[in-house]
Image (cartoon, rainbow, N blue to C red; front, side):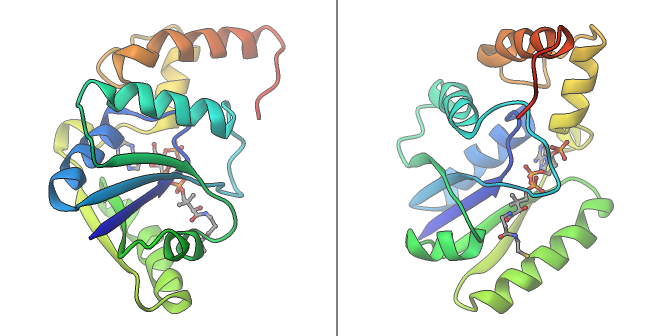
Amino acid sequence: MIACYPGTFDPITVGHCDIIIRAAKKFDKVVVLIMQNPKKHCMFTPEERKQMIEESIREYHLDNVEVAIGSGLTVKYAKKIGADALIRGIRAVSDYEYELQQATANLHLEEDIETLFFIAKPEYSFISSSTIKEIAANDGDISGYIPEGIRARLIEAIKKQNSGGSAR
Ligand code: COA
């Protein structure tokens, strides 16, 4: 069974890593799919986000996990790569309404592809990519929220942005 884990991943967090590791134990293959959320203005390019995800999961030696950059509709891309299911993480009740809407639309578009939810562990339930960027932008300590190997890169990107560089 192939699972596709779509998201913006701007950047990947320890919460995302936890979902990837857990999904890799349940599926033959997991494709972490970087997609465009039209409502988000990203700090990193899709290629940068792909590199950061690959670097973050390297230490777990997950031979059945791949990272891809998609375009268009997530569920259509998932179908094209032979995925059986989309997976998403739910951190709190507040995630549920949005996820329900997305999952229902995706089911309507491709009835063969189910969306399956992983419940985030409590220690990761408050973490989001924007929270981490906001803490880092205000010189807070983000260790423990973001994979260690990409922490310096995020801090560097925030410094660059604060000194006038543009977000993507
Ligand atoms: N741990 C930590 N953080 C988590 C998390 C977890 N387990 N699960 C979700 N999050 C956070 C993310 O960090 C992110 O934070 P942010 O909003 O501060 O950036 C937020 O929760 C959700 O983001 P993410 O999981 O990356 O998904 P998204 O909502 O940005 O992505 C797409 C949605 C890209 C999958 C969706 O927009 C999409 O499919 N786009 C393509 C077009 C399409 O097919 N649309 C659907 C048609 S109805």
